Image (cartoon, rainbow, N blue to C red; front, side, top):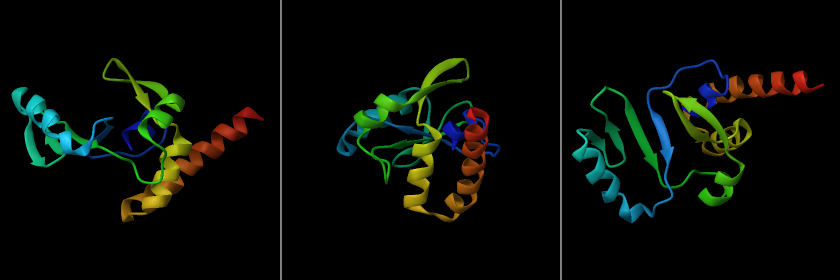
Length: 123
């Protein structure tokens, strides 16, 4: 949801999901890098950084195309002063509708409201 928040969805999120184009079997490369920088592993792909932020690495995103295909359509946003690629709201929505976890059921209408507002502004 961090990408959605950066695009105007009014909600909060516990962690930042980062989709990496790396085979899952190579996640140890991320682990080594993060631990070297002082992060604490909370789960195989979930880390608490020294500053208290929590990041979750994703190796695939359910309901979406490949990383390369989605990256071509990604937008940009600023996160802590850095330009980052973000999935467009439509793609976040598609993934959430595919996964349909309890928290997704809360986020879906919030994303849909922002998208509806954007469509109205374009008219």
